[in-house]
Length: 181
Image (tube, rainbow, N blue to C red; front, side, top):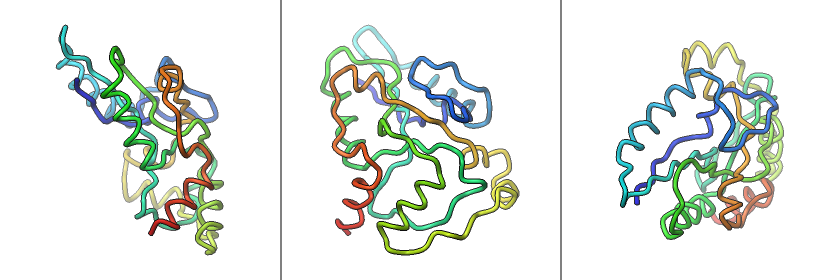
């Protein structure tokens, strides 16, 4: 068994489109990076070695910070609570027959602006300062698409295989993380 960690960025910037594991990607920087990583992992696939490709959203953990929306804030963010990613990886590891790509993210992706607003509410702090898209582009170059673009990824394959999320709603996930600190 081999699990490779990739990202929902595999699909490229998909705007508002819902994407599951069968969606063809938009060829951009994020896709090219993730596709190369996944191609390397798939080289280890053998008759007795199954390979799962974990296309993970933004992981919510205790070190989650505070910031305002990035760019115009309309880009979708696929996200997952740290407990759910650990459980999803264990699920892939222990469920015979699973192989191929799996979107490891909450079934409820949100726009960056909504994410910032919910996080600010949970932390009881304002989130009004925007990070200008141009500043991100100057700092990250073509890598800016990782932050300014987005994917509205849906975890169809994990769900169909029987995986259940503990934290599928953003506010509950962030509240648990903040209260655990």
